[in-house]
Length: 204
Image 1 (cartoon, helix red, strand yellow):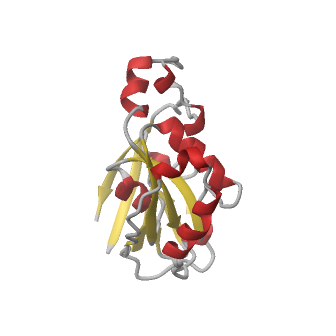
Image 2 (image 1 turned 90 degrees about the vertical axis):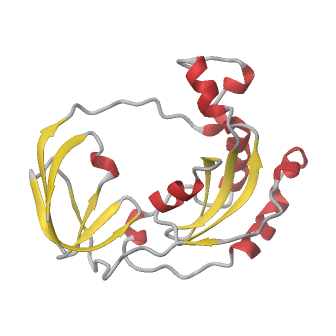
Image 3 (image 1 turned 30 degrees about the vertical axis):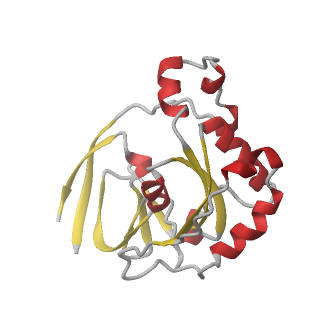
């Protein structure tokens, strides 16, 4: 499938407040910027999970948002480790696992091919031994592993990243979609999420 993205307006770059889950304070009644909004966002149940993206990683996401989160990261496998009552506590548990596991996806490795599958049930059993006693009650007994397949015909051999800061029109043959990325011919990739403040026209 051939397609073309054309950028015709570049919105000003945003400067969002990005915070670490373990630093959230809404459950303590402490305001960061807007306590009412923070309560709605932070006081919902959150999952701590393991995912196989560019290898094994740990992450945090709101309950019922996990599938979107895993697909956004390009995970081919994922398992819920624990369900906690708010974002701060989920962040505290994530910090425990971050001593041993990555919490970021290596996007170049993720786009370089289909990673080897990991025995996530075995990994879960191994790492929950590090969970402090006060958080063990939140460990999920369900060991279901979700597997995700992406529509990719071919992966790039040497990745060339595209963006609208360098060119107004991006076109070519669509080779696949994985995570936040559209994969094009000639080893090119385009990060859709990174351009979410742009206005574009699309033609096929």
